Amino acid sequence: MKTIASLSLDLDNQWSYMKTHGDAGWDKFPTYLDVVVPRALSMLATRELSITFFVVGQDAALSKNGDALASIVAGGHEIGNHSFSHEPWLHLYSKQELVEEFEKAEEAIGNATGKRTTGFRGPGFSASPAVLEVLGERNYDYDCSTLPTYIAPLARAYYFFNSPKMSEEERQKRKKLFGKFSDGLQPLNPYVFQSNGRTLMEIPVTTFPIVKTPIHVSYLLYLATFSRAAAMRYWKLALTACSVLKVQPSLLLHPLDFLSGSDVDELKFFPAMGMPLEEKLGFVNDVLDLYTKQFRVVSMSEHARSVRLDGTASPTCREVLS
Ligand SMILES: [Zn+2]
Image (tube, rainbow, N blue to C red; front, side, top):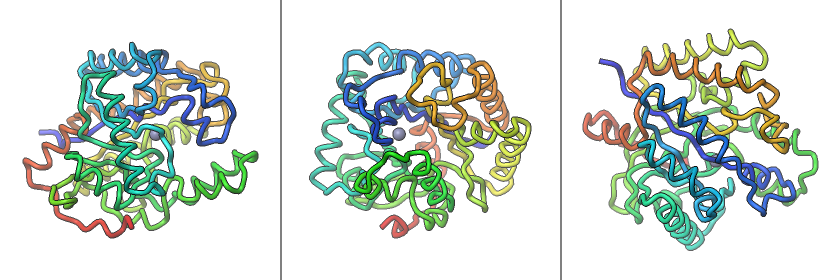
């Protein structure tokens, strides 16, 4: 039988990227969900995949996104919580601010989708002990905000280099964007931990075993801008390493994996946005082909459930987060 693996999509919207980048106009909440969601749903439907969409509460609160969000539920996918305001400096929030953030997100997402969220991914892989405490109090089943990689400081340097207009204050807020070097020490496989007397599961976003370089689809697309064949070889090798080292992978998609620069002018500065749409979708298709051929790909809650039933997750302390 194939090893279990999970797939999720962080439904970051155009405004949230503009906000993090410090661009004017984000507060009108420009949206591309009506373009991205049908493309993603059709690719998933041809493979009969049910995955997890992590929805931002602010998007759920706006009626202009209602149809796109309803179509995700109609497609049989899980809805997860990706915060209300999508601020990658969520780890700087006080406990009270976090409680309010969760209340707002759950209410808006619940109203738009009819679903109560039981899984969370922090914006920009931001996590803190207080976030985990709140997840425990609010009866969440799993968190998947960790990206065990050593290259976070490099990714951040690349990002700041491409954001020359950002003020010193804005840079300070983003100083842990994408995480820190020691994140690379975190485990790759799902594990359980205690928070407020409740057992929560952490499902890390998988990175290449041992070297811990990213393998999420946006990163593969970035590599493909240099050589598509090399990017596919890298992906194939990563999956082989997961199989050999018994890592249950969890792969992450982003809206920009389904968009080209001509769809959204303001985000042209992101890697791989110069790739023609057909080429990009073809590459993402090939990535999913390989993934589903080797693994039994399910949603995040299904992955968490299976690990709990198996008893394969080992208790691990979360001190690395603090
Ligand atoms: Zn996000």
